[in-house]
Structures are given as structure tokens and as C-alpha cells.
Length: 353
Image (spheres, helix red, strand yellow):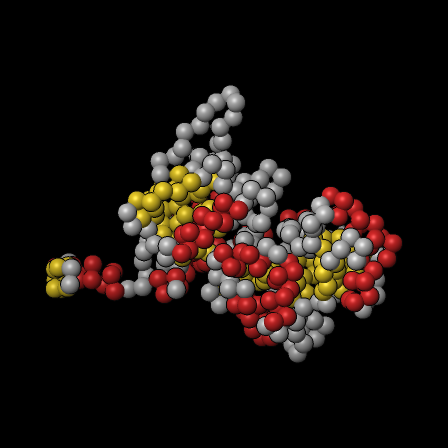
């Protein structure tokens, strides 16, 4: 074609019009490194789903498993080594009966590779993983989400402090600071039973309990401290509701929202616990405050959870937390194609800054 034969003299030599346009455009293909972990007790279904969707978009993807993964410098690039991971995200790890070879190393560079952290939290054994993410971040790679974001979102008490500092409406919450401190914490909270008790570390509704009396509170707190004397326990007022809302916010834009009805016979609404989600139309105040909550934790791709106010048009919702590794299975079923749209946003390099 005539346009492809036209040439431009640039700092790096003579290039075609087609090449010139591609280099000037912020829309460029990229490679995706997903740092993930498949826990038999907590399967990570989202990571392999993201991989499949990304590959359909022409994105080169490498899914690296926490166990045994390591990184080497290769000039201005890095090499990532991982044991093989199958199509459902299960890693082929060596055992006493057989050895497993590492996959061919995946070469990455900060100019063409996006790093996505999935399925990790502050549990024992994950600190070296955070060190890897922190090293990539300090080497100029775009890491989603940032180490700071993950540290805030993986600690419910830290998340609550950030909300309060940024004027984000949230249920009254206090920290139980000692195994004998439950009565003092309940008095400080200043609301009637029932209350919500949460361990500071936990996801998918695990570690969240419904407390109906002072006697029940004492018993649960004693049990938790017996299991772990260094545990952080939050006590929170219960906001009565029939559902809560999960909002997916990407780079300061709302990509979609789903209503998660309270599970029958339970008080939780997590999709992983059996809640059946449906599309939720946000009010203007819900949209604005969800974006504000995402920005408060330095979030790039996050799930923002809130309980709606009685007067949704005029009153602020009650924000529960921001999830830095939101499960996308439920919202993908509710809003078809949302994962693809999220990945497409990063074709634009302006969204890497």
C-alpha cells in the first residue's frame, strides 16, 4: 500500500509510516506476567481465567506459581522461572516420587511487560513473594496492584484507617487489642448487639463472624487468641441490609458493579460463599465514593465493597473494604466481557503511569 511505502527519518533511522504510527500511538500490545498461587484450600480461579481472556486478545501471558518461582537479571530485562501451571491454574510441583522441570524462562522488560499480582496475602510463606513484587516495582515495572495497595487491602484494620483518613463513610470499627479486651472494645464501639467480628487477615468471607451477645463475643475472642496470640481482631457495627455491592474500579473508572444478595441462613454475601450476583446500577454518589475508595488505597484494578444507604440517591454508602485481588468469576458471569475490557485498557501505555 502507498502509506506503507512512505518513509520518515527519525532519531533511530528511516522507518515506514505504519511503523511510525504504531510507535507514536499509546495503543500497543504487551506481555502479561501473572504472579499467583493455587491453594488447595482456596483455589485461585481468576488467574487462569485472566490468562485465557488475555491470550484471546493476543497478549503473551506467563502464569507463575508462588511455590518454587524465582527471578534472575538478564541485562535490562529479567527472567522468570516457574514450575508448569495447567489450564485451570494448578501447578505441577515436584514430590518424592517425581521431579518436575522448570518451564522455559519468561523474559520480561519494564517497557513491554505488565505484572499482575493475584491470590496472595500476608500469610506465612508469602514474604519472599512480596519481595519479588517490590523488586519489580522498584525496577520500573508496572505492578498491579502496587505493593502498598496490597499491604493496605490485606489488612482490614489498615484499610479502615485509610478510609477514615480520607473521609470515606464506613461502619464504626474498633480493634480488640488484647485477649481480655473484648468488653472494653464493645463499650468503645458504643452500639448494640448483634455485632460483626473479623480477623484482620482473611478473604472471601473467611474469618467473619456474627456476634449476638457479650458471652458469645468473649468465647470467640478467647478461642481465636488461643489459636494465635498475635492475631488482630476487629469489632464492627452491623449495618442491616439485604445485599451488598461489589464495584470493579480500574484506573479511576468504574467498569461495572454487581449486587450480592445476603445468603439465606447466613449474614454474608460473598460469591465464593454461594451468593448469586446480579447487575447493580450505581447512583452518582455510589459511583463517586467508590472511585474515591479505590484511589485512597492506591488501587489500579480493585473490587470496592459497600453496603447501600437507605436513601441511595442522597446518602453515603457504608464502605466495608477494598479488595486488591478481586475475584472476577462472579462479575464476569454477571457482566459478560468485563475482564476483556479491563485488559484492553492497558493496551494504552498512558494507563501504565
